Length: 202
Length: 167
Image 1 (spheres, chains in turn yellow, red):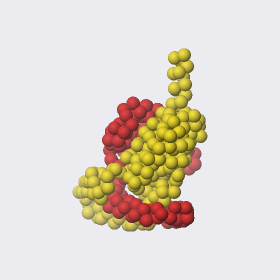
Image 2 (cartoon, rainbow over the protein chains, first blue to last red):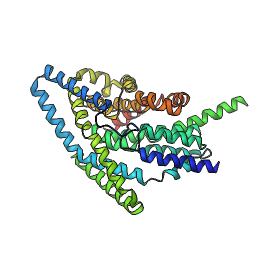
Image 3 (spheres, helix red, strand yellow):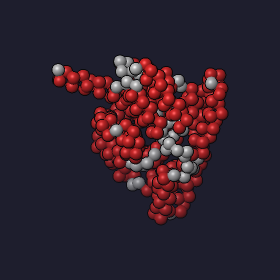
Image 4 (tube, each protein chain N blue to C red):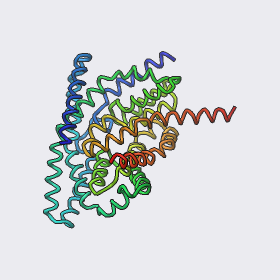
């Protein structure tokens, strides 16, 4: 058991670090122009054409230059966010985190799992294998759900890089603050359900 | 102004994170710059495309309709509707956030936006189908989605109430 605890997660930690990347992305080296970009570009072109036709070229050009200027203003912030997120990911002791989320870790274990999900950068190709190896090392379903939920709802990387680029700061802050307890609450709900089922059985 | 403050704060935090990393693990410094550059280049075409799409879409969205269905006065209906839309929105973060930004520009309320973003985050069909089910199994995915079901609606309601009382 202790052996397994040590080898499995750290192995995966190394693999995960090599595969980690800034945003939610594919496991392979990312092509700059993939299907996701195609969708957004198509959306922009189609809605741009729609604006040109229904509102006239003046409105089209006004929005075009307004948003391009906005994008240019955002780029320094995005660069800072990327460096911050990448540095945090490299600085966090991933292997130590994994050892702390054992089966008898109680609420602190759920909190650590949720924090790990929120803070460790990397897309689905990193986070899911990490969670799976954690469960293989003895973490329960509740801790795994806390980790995945912490990642999907509160990923620091995604919030710094994407959410703050597109949405107003005050709204992002409000969303993050009210979402903070959610991953742990879901983990607690799962443990409570499991206990009730065990009680019903016995 | 808002952007400037955010930029400065983020750069200050980045400075301390990089300094910490250089002191504790100088060996990873090249990887830090290489990965950061890669991510930046990845985002470079996506940000203008996403913002332009959001701007054009906002101009096309009938503001009266958005206001009626997703505005602050739409209340629970708007939050439920936004949750539904969030669950079926395909694509990566820039698609969902760009759509959210358009809706805000066209008059959507805080509750609907938070419900939309939360619902998209929890469900994210593409990610769930292509990563979670193969890597974690259908049972894990089902349990996670089931316990997460009330989350977007509750968060939307909380955001709605708090936003109103703050303003």
